[in-house]
Length: 216
Image 1 (cartoon, rainbow, N blue to C red):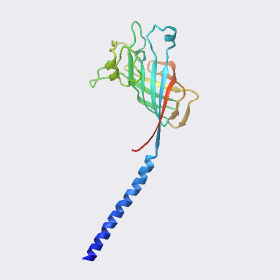
Image 2: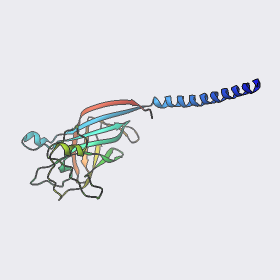
Image 3: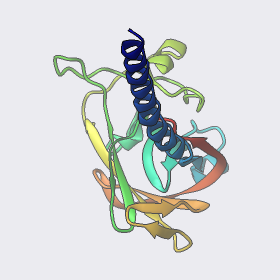
Image 4: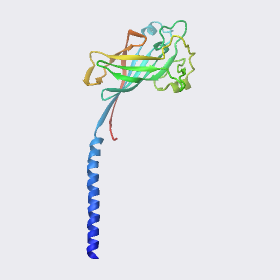
């Protein structure tokens, strides 16, 4: 009987020891992963229409871009602008305003491109996501903009349903690694869909640095 109890205790001790040894390597590996630091910059760029400075009574046409850069890669972004971005030429009416997310982000050799698309229903019908006043830059969805502002009178003719932009980097911008860029104080934006020759210079307004430890 004593021999049986001794064998049982030894077997139980052996099982507990294996369990402890199996946990420790995992804990060490998790500790290593937890120490990986993810660096993210939130950059706000601004473009001011010089004509508005000369003629202050004109409706504002300024634009903002907010870029989320994670370890040199553009992860996502938002664009505040006017309907002129989608129109080949505005005549006889006042523009509308929008806030849209950047989609289909592509990293090229010396630029980053992204797409802005008009919102559609699940049946493929266009949704009027434009409003009558400039959208506050703290609003980051067209749904919230529509809930806070009057809806713009949609004009169906002459509008492109989606447009692609290209962010061109200044000479001060350095490429730190493949597909990775360090954004400068100014960037050049080009509308590739409507007028590929027209360029606008956006100026950095605000930079917010964030470093977080990856735990997953």
